[in-house]
Length: 152
Image: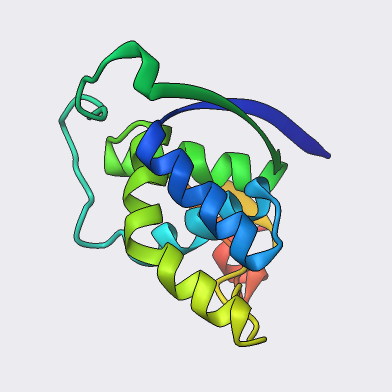
């Protein structure tokens, strides 16, 4: 099931997204999904703990646009996890990813290459309780040995 949501993006980011759509023939939601997946693979140096969520720099109201996006359930969960782990707003995650990864996505798409090689299939959230402590494991994809990883 798809989830309809909105993102408040800066005009510069929107321009990058729209240019990518025009050059690749892909829909905006698909490109945003690809940016989310690439951000997940590239987030190890950006993890922040114990901080409040960082937002984009302020700018004039007319430079901000609300866009409607349709994400898969997994992609919506991935974005929520990224927000919690990176301590960045959804729109900041997308803005940073657009600047880091869009040129590569466009290059691959225009050369006929498969440009979404970061796909995950499945989203698994596992709760573990040991010694009175509760731990959550988040799987972006499906573990190779689910019997041991998920403690079924």
